[in-house]
Length: 477
Length: 153
Image (cartoon, rainbow over all chains, first blue to last red; front, side, top):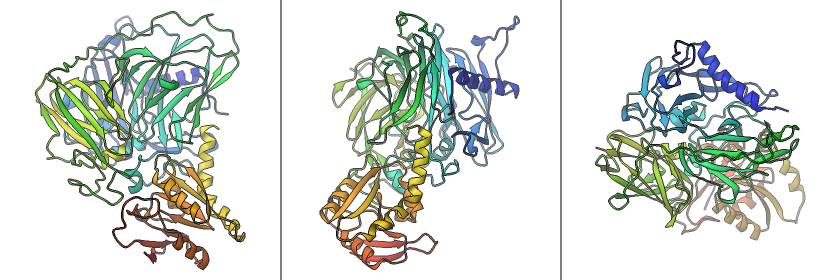
């Protein structure tokens, strides 16, 4: 049995940083007394290229993936809130690439969208990204060029911005969850952008990994409190995680703190690109094992991983009595009374009224999806007018109306928004995010202050929906 | 079930499904057994299964996220895919193929992998809306021969 213990996970995380350091890829400035100067920031080198990793288990050959620094997922980048970050990205692929720093409110020129915010990085070329993350939280980075294929083959990693005063926990775990469609010999199956799947829910795979491996168990200790950072880095799979025998408390979504709360029905639902910070008080029996089950898809529930308790007696008799609430981030609060309201109709797809092979006004080429009747396909079409323009500093409400039969995790670049209501019912717990999961036929409203000038992508994060037209731009001037 | 076991199960299902059902055709008179693989979120496929049940079939519906792989391994080219994939009598039947065409296939038993009605034509079994044009059902093979017209309706 493949057993990934916390120490192994920890070692792997350390290994990622350590390896990178060994190759000079990651370097943290060091103070005179030898302590790393976290506040002085982080400079990383990320080299996109191909490598082989053992993902499924020892009975299978290694899987060829596209990675940063030969690590799958890419190296965990940790930086202190408010400290400068730099990344030298080298393109070792045979096609163009860029890196998008998902969820981080950064200058437009650093956003990593090819031909919109920068020229694509050609094979053999480099680009330096530099920004200072204003918000603490769980973020991530991934390719934004040929992103269906490049992310689908592995170009993604976690970007953790540490609070100046993090909450008291015994341990922190990061689960970067990825979904792969593997062939019988554990290679990534060809056939990206399958026409039928593009009109349904995208390329959902057959193998789910945590931190690059198919896991069976994570070792835990009774009584400890774990901060679990969950990142859904899949290109299409939606997850609904249940922690059997446990009561996880969500303390942040998409990096932004919320009121600590237990999820509805105990299920943590995360669409592609979404993150949750979860507090887990390990109240299970020593020596017992508990399943973490993903039951999002009807009749396709499976055990993602097991929490395996050490036989030792609990580290404390009662759950840790420390506040779970995370410190606030400096995200501006929108003024709903003066906000400009923009309807965003999500259209198309199978069973959407047009059928396969159908088309809509404004759809051309491979378009099967549209926003307000217009389809921006591929990695974005130059020259297409923005959905709307808004004056910098104004509050804005996006009124998503999902007219399709499918779920859409809608992602806005450069901003974090407040999730207001779903089908007219106010969303509790003060939820903020950069990606909101919109159910079939659902109406969801989010609000934000358009305080970041530039052209910003607004798109579905099911990658085949993006390339098939569920993408647009908003302009903040 | 661990994720790895699931992975292996899915891989083997897709490979062995046609062979499994060959033997069941030897039974006569009783309902014709079929297994229909569908996207877990697609509802029109359920309508198609009900349509077949009314026509003397016994359909086992299996949701899967591996539909594209299953149909491809069964010999259906990507541009001719329907929205679900069914195995019956040793053949693949892809999409909303009317029952009379399936009966013809099972009666004639041609040396092909199966048949497909591409897309989701309006008015076809399980689909809403009026029939707006001629439907072309193609025969497909696994040996690289190009698809041929099997029936037009």
